[in-house]
Length: 469
Picture 1 (cartoon, rainbow, N blue to C red):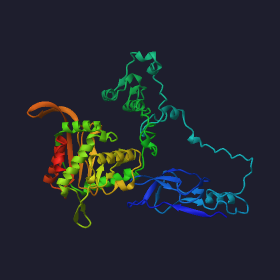
Picture 2 (picture 1 turned 90 degrees about the horizontal axis):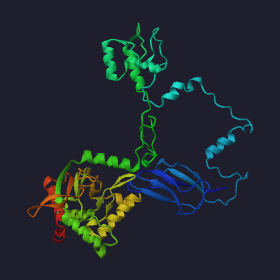
Picture 3 (picture 1 turned 90 degrees about the vertical axis):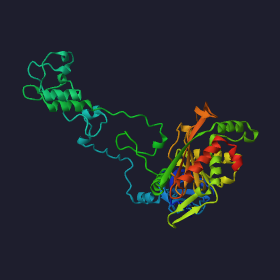
Picture 4 (picture 1 turned 180 degrees about the vertical axis):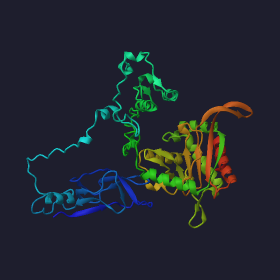
């Protein structure tokens, strides 16, 4: 008899209680080995590939791709002794035991007896009017029988006929009805009067206006929008509803909690960063940095680390449960990254210890992993202060929301050439805007302003970092 082992959703750590099944790497009947890739899951923090825990044959997959599964729930079964003695009737192991039992208990049907075709109710058949009208909004469209016209008075010309539309046949309508027709864009000569003596009524005009709006509404193609693949539509394709899961759900919860728990204050600073741009240019040509991607983000990250070193009280957290302020003696620097799964803020552990080149390498690796959806869960927790770089999108600045558990976040805007007073003269300089949001329970306005001013000072004169470093 086969020996069945069950694999349960493991605990991914970081306090996570559930995960989504993204992609199964195996199928029922596959022979597998220990540590072979089994399934890719998505937690609220990252994509994780789970290894196979057994040698044997896959019997059943107990969760479908797209399912959300809680920790500890069985997701797969394996036969870990496939060479054992087979059942007496030599029946293969069923992939779905419940379905197999149902098949065994069902009476056998005649092999050649075709199933009768289902009867289609008369009311379910589509009418010619329905086939021609297309998808329309609820409450709009051609009413039943609206295609039928009343016969006009003897001798009257039907303008729908074509050439007769230019006839001088007088239209009988009261002034309010004529006014309504003008407002709705309805030509009275195209209507079939329903009033006594050939009088065009208000209802005639309204019905014509309604028929004019009975058309399919245009939508743009959604085939090239991969974020809609897991969604569905309730209005004929006019919109797509996507369940809120994993990273998007976690981000939404965190942002709402942060925005409505911590009193946010944002201060702004415009800085001349021409010297920073010159430094970036020199570093790119430096042999020591040839294998490193150097950008202005590297310099602003170093500037923020220097500012935190000068003002360590900003590197703190508010413990609401204990009613304590937690001052941290290390800096885990978060870098906000936009990914196909939503916004992630992985952080560089102990960034305050890193020289400039190592900091550049860490930023590059952090960004690459985020783009590839391979950010480990450990990199998404424990941050102390963060940077959001909106400059590459052409945005000047913003008012970022704090990550829960952090006291400040710096927004780094686009760097632009513009007129600037430099050494008493108006010159074209590289200029950017910086914004620092902070938790006003922990950081008062003076402290926040001093930290931002220090960041701007290093960006304007990177040599100042040598003095402070």
